[in-house]
Structures are given as C-alpha cells and as structure tokens.
Image (tube, rainbow, N blue to C red; front, side, top):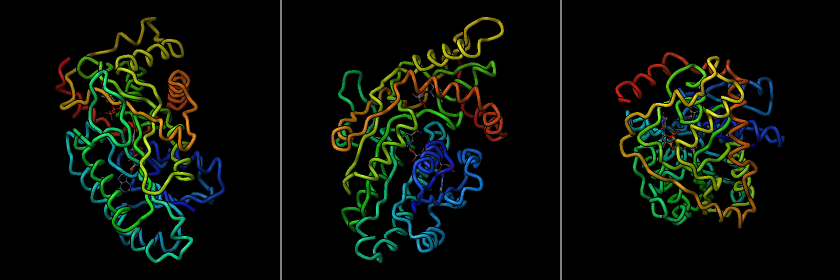
Length: 355
Ligand code: NAD
Ligand code: TYD
C-alpha cells in the first residue's frame, strides 16, 4: 500500500481517485482537513476498502509513526501543504508550520521507520515530495524556462516555505540516504479545484454574476497543466524516477492570465450563455496587483520526457473545456465549498483592492 498526505485537497484527491481507478493497491490518506481539504472530493470512494482515510497532521509524529508501523506502506507521496500564495501574504504562519515544520517532522518520523526496514523493503521505499515551480522565482519575458538546476529564488512566503521543504527533502537524501524523489510542477487546473485560485474563481464568479478580478495588468504568465496529467507524471516518477533526483513537470503551455480569463469567458458564453445575451467578459475588472507578484513562470519538462517518457495527454483547449464542464455539472460541490469561512476569505482578499 501507499501513504498519501493531503489527499483530500485538489491535486491529492485527483491523485487518489486516479490511483484507485487503475491499481488495486490500497491508499492510506492522511489529511488534516484544513479549509482546503474536503471529504466530498472522495465521496465516490465511500465504502471502498482500498481507501483508508485518516484525519490528522503530517507533523503529528506519533500518529504518522503508528500509521507507518501498522500499515507498512512502500511509499509516501507528500501533497499536504498550505498552497495559496494570496493566503501566504495575509498570514504566513500556517505555511511555515505545515510546509516547513510539518515536512521536517514527516521526514524525521519516516527516517525512524525506514532505517529499521529490512534490505529489500528499505531499498524499494520511496518518499515522493510534490513541489512547485514557484521555488525558482520569476522569469523575464524571454528567459529560458526553469530546468531542474535553475537557482532557487522564491519570492512569496508560500514559495519560500516550499523551497525550504525541498531543501529538507534533499538534505535527508544526502545525509541519511532516505530514498526521495522531488517533483516541481507548474500551475494545475481541473476538477475539485478550490475556488480561491484563478481558474475556478473565475468560473464560479462568472456564473454568480460577480466581477472577475484580474490582478494588475493581467499579463503575468503561468504554465498550466491539467491536474490528471500531473497525477500521471507523479505515478511515472514514483515508478521509474531515480532516487535523489528532481523532475520538473509542466504542460508546455505558457499563457498570460488575461488570456486564461478570456478563454473561460468564451467557454461559458458557449456552454451557459448569460440570460441578457452579453459576454461574461463584461464582468472582468482589473484590480490592485498582488504584492511581489511573480511575472512569469515557465517549465522546461524535457528531463521527465527524455528520461521517463512522460508527456501530458491534454492540451490546454481540451483540459479547460473538461474543467468548465465539470464545474457546470457539479454546482452542488461548488455551493458546498462556499462556506462562511470562504466568504470571509473573499472579503479579506478582494475588499479594498480598488478597481
Ligand atoms: P490544496 O490546498 O488544495 O490541498 C492541500 C491539502 O493538504 C488539503 O486537503 C489540506 O487539508 C491538507 N493539509 C494541509 N495541511 C496539512 C497538514 N499539516 N497535515 C495534513 N494535511 C494537511 O493544495 P493542492 O493544490 O492540492 O496542492 C497539493 C500539493 O501540490 C502542495 O504541496 C502544493 O504545493 C503542490 N503544488 C500545487 C500546484 C497547484 O497548482 N495547485 C502546483 C504545483 C505544486
Ligand atoms: P493562483 O491561481 O493563485 O496561482 P499562483 O499564484 O500560485 O500562480 O493565481 C494564478 C495567477 O492568477 C497569478 O498570476 C495571480 C492571478 N490571479 C488574479 O489575477 N486574480 C485572482 O483573483 C487570483 C486568485 C489570481
């Protein structure tokens, strides 16, 4: 069996669902169920004996040690993190606690377990750390995309905390020989994406008749990858990646934010037209920029392509269409995640950002 952390969040839930759709191997899913964790993402697994959900913190060493001893997983895939840049600007503390201290405790607990394993189990064990391209900082317009050896230059409390966790993972390999793998991926999108991030926020706000808040001039560039392609890349790295190595994962799909918002509007115009016949584009509002906003991220994914023969299956056109369809078909999920805490977040982040 495998142990997945953060498997009730956006990418983790997609990973668990995809894993169990293709393999018979049981998943222990350890998730603290923060605001971003949602059992509803895993509702289709209710009653499935291959999914063992445990509510808890990666930093709870006693709990993690007990899970490892009892279930003896052959791998850990670490998704658990605080993941939203804007929240890290408003309150970095949780990011330091989970992404740095939590990862450290998880590694330390794992070290105790792994060092006592017998030869084969010890050799075959893998700790796969899921990280982000944001650790590399911001690129100028024409600079080459991030490779695995790009200098770390994180600019937000989120990316700094992820960078710190990557360094800890690296150190546990070099110092203790822990069999680690690290992946640094670009921006994901797809089903179960919490509507605080750009794409789901735009879909949800558009349908609710609210404004579509574009930060600054909307010309910031991100590389976008459909979440299920990220999941397939992680499965591939787990299966064939070289211990101690880093793999960048991306979609070769750089786009300015405003183009993303225009695409979402065009799809909604086609699939769920406004009753007044106007385009959703009319709801776009340019608002005050994010402090320290990284201008451009771009991933050079040639290493994983070359060494592990992985490529994304979706283009942006096919992935974004699937995503908009999913949100239109899952309006109950959307309604259920819009709790009081969610509304408070919108208030905190968007009120006072002058148009
Ligand atoms: P998310 O915020 O949707 O989910 C995070 C999950 O981790 C939640 O279910 C939450 O309850 C859980 N969690 C938080 N703190 C925890 C703790 N202390 N112990 C146990 N569980 C805890 O995040 P996501 O978008 O699914 O991202 C997953 C991972 O992928 C993160 O490590 C993130 O840095 C990385 N990543 C995300 C993206 C992206 O575009 N979303 C891109 C590249 C890398
Ligand atoms: P986000 O989804 O928060 O991901 P990240 O900051 O990790 O890349 O944001 C993606 C881009 O969209 C980023 O450049 C910020 C921008 N953005 C907006 O313009 N408006 C918004 O309301 C949000 C949430 C993001």
